[in-house]
Image 1 (cartoon, rainbow, N blue to C red):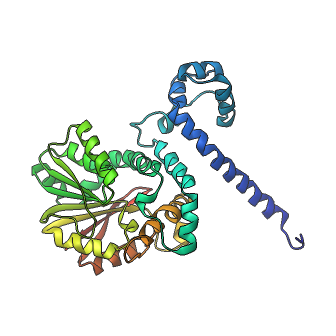
Image 2: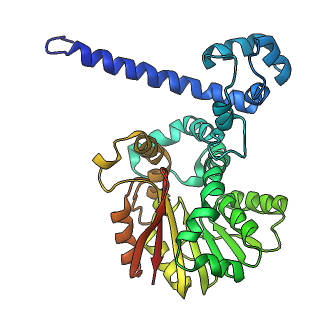
Image 3: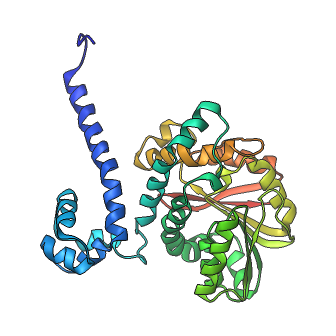
Length: 343
């Protein structure tokens, strides 16, 4: 290859970024090991430690731990990093993201086939770590924002939930969002629907552990035809864009909603154009959408493939087509936009 016309400074900058990205990618499995072996928890709040001390506190082999610590750059876990890596109750706990990353690597052959054929890859066809990782990744944000901020931003919904409402959480996965709402609003009843039977089984277990099984149900059903009607609130948490037929799903929601009911759609934060999303959050969401969201939609009927960065304008078009007359952005976080749709 001729070097004629090559800008050496640009090449050096690109190679530096490539090496940085490769280091991050290679470090991801080590982060998973640190989480699952309890290495971060062993270091949290302990001050400076030697490799021997870390290995003893975690019950691991010192030589392996010593090499792992070399990648981690420091032998002390600062409190800020402990929030992200050792505190499961923290709003910035990151463990789930690394299970998602691990699941994507495990699905490499399936994804190659999906890209070649355009047939997609169903949610249920992914490595099992995706399901647990997704729950762990989204739950801290829901725990932090859902009850204190998102629900109060919806017109009249909080009062209904406090007095007793019926709620459908469609595409609930392991039921993290359903359980959080059930804990906060004991007078209301909540039904979680998901087509993935293994996720529904896990949701039932978690509801029992949380002590909210008296006001929650979890059933296997699709977004296009889940049972029941006259719901006061129907929710989609980070899943409408994954659906093959989001218009059909939203149309069924419109039919199942009470006339004065509210449809809450929580979606990844994004602008309406590619240029709007050229930032670290957009990069992460485009990556996830390439290997999880878009293949999931392509594997279903219609296969609209909105993608995780569909944007408010495109989502509003979908909701209007489904029969909703009013759509507004109720609130947002750096990672999510919360849309409120009314009949």
